[in-house]
Image (cartoon, rainbow, N blue to C red):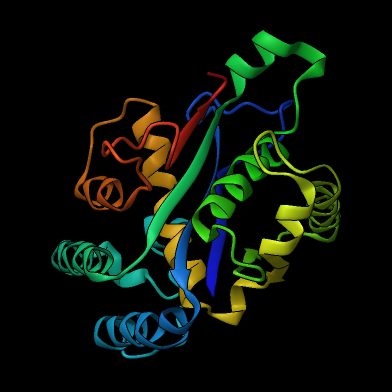
Length: 244
C-alpha cells in the first residue's frame, strides 16, 4: 500500500494575496506504507536525535526559518550550515516520490475572476489524480494523510474529498478514486509523523522555484524526486503549475 502525505505552502484564500509569496502550493510525498512506518521514521528520528538531542521536535519549515520552537540553535551560522547539509543528505537518501500543484493566485483571478476555484480544492483534484495513476488498478492501494489546519478548513477538505469520490477527476472516474484510495485521514502536526514532515520540507522550495527565486540545494534534491513520464519530464506529471 502507498501513502500520500500532503502539506501546503502559502494561503489558499484568493482575497488575500501576499506580494512576497503570491502562490498556493499543495504538495506531497508518495511512500510505501511499510517504508514510511519503518525506515523513513527511523531515519528522520535518528537525524533529529543527532542534531537536537531529541526525537520530539517537529521539522516545520516556518519554525526552522524563524529559529523558534526548538530551532533556536539555527541562529548560529555553524550549526545552521551543518543542519542544512545534513537535512539535504537525508532527503536525498530517502525513498519517496514528489507530486505538487502550484497555483499562481493573481493569474488565476485574472483569468477566471469570481468563477475561480479555491486553490486548495483545485490542487487536491490534481494530486489525487496523479496518486491514483501511481496506485494503478490495485483496489485499496493507497491512503492520503493530510495535516489538520482548523475545524472549518478541515471540514472543507473532507467535503472536497467526498466530492472527488462522487464526481471523480478529469481522467479518473469516481468509482476508481473510491476503490483505489481507501481514505483521507487528517493528523495533527503534534502527532510528529515523519511523512508529513517530509511533505512540509518539500512544498516551499517548489513555490520558490515557480516564483523564479535562486535555486538552492534543497530544490535540486526535490527536483530529483519529482514524478516523471517515460521521457523523464516532470512538468505536468510531478509538478503542475496553474493556470496553464
